[in-house]
Image (cartoon, rainbow, N blue to C red; front, side):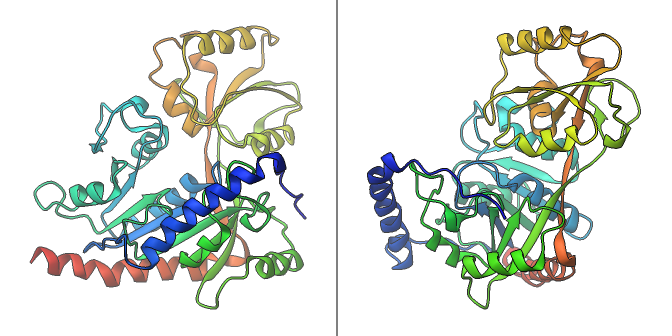
Length: 367
C-alpha cells in the first residue's frame, strides 16, 4: 500500500482560494457560459488532475503504437518550455527549444506520426485538420489537455499516479492538484499508473473503492517497463538492463519529475549508481554539462557509463556544450506502458472502435 503524499498544510488557505477559482471556471463550462468546441476528427485527451509526472508521455506513446498502423495519427501538446510561440509543426530540423523535449522525443521515435505544438489547442487542431496542409489526419492525441476545456474530446483518459492518487491529494499550492478531484467526472477512462507489477486484487479493489467512479467510467491499472539501453551517439549494440554488472559504475542523469523508480530499477542490477538529478524539463546549460563531465571523471576508469531518459536525451542530443569524450558512454533507457490484468484486451478495442467509427465524420466534413 502506498504512503500518503506530503501535504503542506500551512498553505491550505491558498489552496481553498485556488480551488474556488478553478471550480468556478469549470462551472462556467458546465453551464455553457464558456463553450467547448467540437471538431470533425477523433480527439483523444490524455491528462491528469495533478502537476508532475503521471506517465502522460508513455501512455501517449502507447496509443501511437496502438493506432499508427491503422490510422494517420497526429499529436498535439503545448510544448512545455519551448522557446517558440504559436503553432509549430515538427520537422527534421526541430530541436527541444523549438517544440519541447517530449514532442521531440515522440517525433524522433515515430517518424510516421505528425507532431505539433500549440498552447491554443483549438487553433492547433484547426491547423492540423486543414485540408490544405494535413488532409489525411484520422485522429489527434491531445497530450496533457485535460484542463483545456475549450476543446471537447471524444475520449478523455485521466491518469493518476499509484504513489500519489488524486483522492489523497489537495489543490495547489498545499498539494499538487490542478483542479479538485471532482474533475474526474469528465473522464471516460481512468488509469492508475506506475503500479507495482504484483499489485494484488485486494489493493486494486481498495483503490477502485476510493476512486468512486461512475459505472460508465472504465478503470485500468498500468505499470512501467524499461526497455534496452540504447547508445545515444555511438554505433554500438543495445544492452539489456540485466547485462549491467555489479562492478559497473552508472552515472544516472535525469531531469524528470520522479527519478526514484528509475534509480530503484537500476540498483536491482547494478549497485554503483550515481544520480545527477535536475528539475523536470530542465534546460541543460553549459554549467550542467561541466557538472556531468566532472561527475563522470570521478568514476573509476573501465566499466562506466552514463544512463539518461529519452526525454532528457532529446535535450542532450543537440547540446553544443556536451563533451565529445562523453558521447560514446551515453545510453538512453526507454520506458513503455504495460497493462495489469490483461487490461489491454478491453482498452485497445475501445480506442480503436472509437477512432474507426468517428473518423467517418472527418471524411463527410471534407466532402
